[in-house]
Length: 94
Image (cartoon, rainbow, N blue to C red; front, top):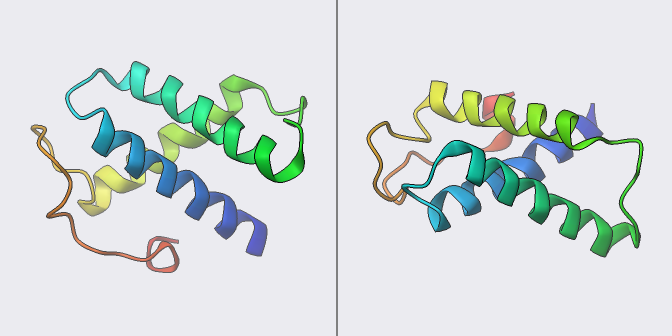
């Protein structure tokens, strides 16, 4: 359970960062940027990327996190920066 919360929090932070930096770009471009950044972070921590985790699975996790953020209002529809989004901890979302 702790690992799933860590994964959710890590992916969530990266998704928020990518959303803020790439605001206004298509979701597919944001997903690819998030995949690249997650791989970079994991490789920096572990020294390698676990080959058993395909990009498709990582993309599905990112899509799930984004859907949660859309549902709870973290991402507002219609663009613009996310600075005014409500502050909700990862524990409250789970």
